[in-house]
Length: 639
Ligand code: CA
Image (cartoon, rainbow, N blue to C red; front, side):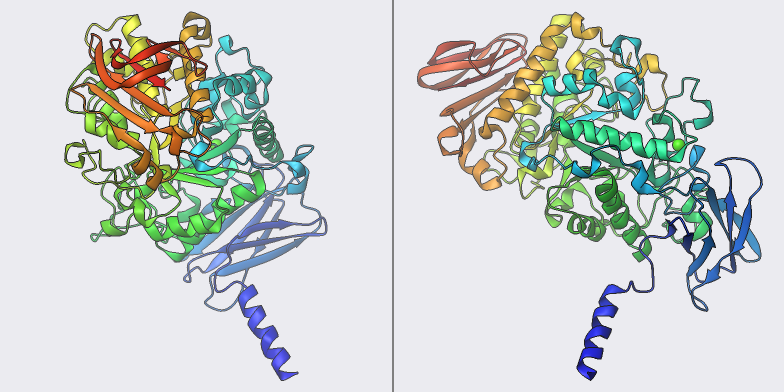
């Protein structure tokens, strides 16, 4: 009996949360709703207010919350009756002053503009068939990522969408068919949690923002819903979006921005636990590693746990397939590993392996690109391949490989092997990383453009003097051929497939629709671009040689050909790659304004990519020996 009691005690100790509750907020049942909030230990009082609406009006009830234990940090209240459809706020008193009402850090439903938490029966937010929704099974090595902003994608009349700029646009056949035709299998959506910069009470007016100004981390953004006043609508519509994409075999990746909040004083963090969630400098000022005025402190237990629980929540409640961490280099390595270990292995995690300023935390503990080897199963964007192609990030007009500037060949090679150790790369000549950083090639994101900086068309126009439309298309297709034949995980910005431009605006985070929108008429203007992109992506997906997924295999089976400036070429021994139908594959990139050549062994080869045409079934055949690559284009042949 005694032994049994001890066993129960041990089990209880393991099951019962320790000093901190992972998720606070509200738990709803028709008979009563429970509220909880965590504060710092010096909090003096917490008021809970219940409202009829998400904005305005007087509280219908005000409750003094009870401290769980003297000097404790957890406060609770139970309110009897059916509160479904009501709203709530917390107001915490420190030093004799209430700090102000907020939804708390764990609201999972909110009213308009995220000012008040909402009491919702989450089971009623599921669309029909939601229980049967499953994440598509696509290993990291097979992913092709498509980064998009809801409003960019569907706002313009030319798109013909019913739900312009909304989550629901991604449920429309026009969207699904486009994505399936293009062949991407993961949509990475720019911030889609509740952010501050779009006023949800004025959605009849055009408002644009990327959304890197988080308010409520665990609630979808109201501006992308058809009714931000009804808390369950955005939740339901977000789920419909995920469901439609999953049905099409497309994963949904969330852009998460835990590294900073839109402001300090008004944030849920600061209103409930002042100064707990933010890093400070030695002089007491707030550190600004995010470049947005503040930086969170992932190394603190409560912040780390918050990030872990938030990510788990999106996976469990919304069936999210992966996460892109904004300024991942602001977070610490231990937290990123804790997140990795808290979610299933098929959840794809990647981030920006840098910060936007100095962080108030030891640099060797930050989740920077150079530390990716300490973070198995986490990938980082490669600025080496990006800038090696288009030109350096601190200039809009400097060209690199694409512009026919010599000296970037090793940066391309670095990106082609997926940032791993490879005998064919001279790391001393790589633009930024003077050493390989990835253990496996799936730890590197290959890309040439994203929402930040100029899009590819604008950058080419700004950096290649006197560029013609023909050259623009040639170099655009060449750039994506490098990306799509990289052993890293390829990533493209939405609209590149229709030769989008942003009229030269390099930081379009709040530019009007006229700058950011996709012009779907471009599909008819430049049909050869979409044609090439889809054929290129289809070829990558059909040929394991282009995404081996293992550093050892890449080292064994990929070797570079001796070449000259502005010419990079490699060979893959397809015979050694499981599932690969092609034997020897040769890939070459030439950015000279005239044809160049490479030497390949004698024999007959099938050409699958040449002179801005790509078709894995074969365009023509050629003889080995000296093989010509036309000006400013890619060549891919195999036998
Ligand atoms: Ca919002």
